[in-house]
Image 1 (tube, rainbow, N blue to C red):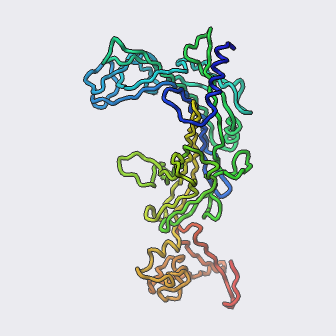
Image 2: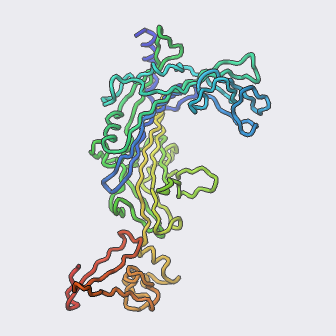
Image 3: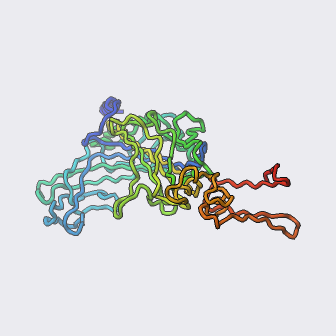
Length: 454
């Protein structure tokens, strides 16, 4: 290792020990360890897959949209564009679509050249060190994609004085599929601790291979219960009892609203910059059903926790969807996203945790009572054990046996039939869409005093 390389390594380490904001003229390493979970009960969950994304960017430019029918690219300079087609791409893929853009003119402003990391040398990138990890050895580049580009700027206003700008952009993606084995692999390959990455320093040559070393401190992020290695530590995301779990789904009567409560998102797991977002989605199309989004607007979940706000003193432990948005019989998927934004000088952690659970919207007696009785009915009259219409059947019995508890002319008639085998059969259709909110129990008696549950 040369003296210059040792010096650069020392500078990198000494400048990355404090929490701070990235400045525009710094190379930025973005680190994402993303995980997706399906919550299936108070103590159970499934890992749906995830990914490890690393992206190193050094330099930037802002793309403008000019007046030629929204077109942004030209094969020749176009002074009629209000901002001018100011940059000629001389190397690389400017828009990241996988196609080389050499020879195109783009309308951009305010470019910033790479100052620390050399472009077009993805084969030299190395992960220098990690915490104890099961990552394959030797730790290499992990399929880095070079998205760097070079351009001459400003071609319209100063064609003879245009300056060449290099913008460095390296991307690496490591996917994880669903299942317990993949969850274990994800955790074992990307444990908590310090990661050191080597990138080619500006001016790198084979005879002078100076490296720019970046340290990323990977800190704890929330997971689904029971957590890593099936050993709970007390901060895992979960929806415990007494939530109305039934068959791997939460049951709510939407006429009563939906009061979602959870554990695990707290002042221990939340850090400065973190956000929590919530939505209810269509299980088939994944479209957002709540919050209500005006036509033509982008679909976005609702922000329910923002630790960018210094006045925030508590993490969201639940969210209540009011009545009026849904009806019994619908199925929806609840989604909660924990989104990190934690900067350490040259690095930023933008990891996400996505938690989903299925929700069945059922027809309960309490929900029915809000709309099934005349306006002005008292609490006593709509009590499930009260006989509102005086026909000898309680409100709850008529609800369960699908007759109108406000109409004395509608009376349940669960009549047993005698089969040829000599057996007596009683068929009672269950009220559809009631889920586990309505339990039917049949009893028999020979003296109307002593009853035996069948």
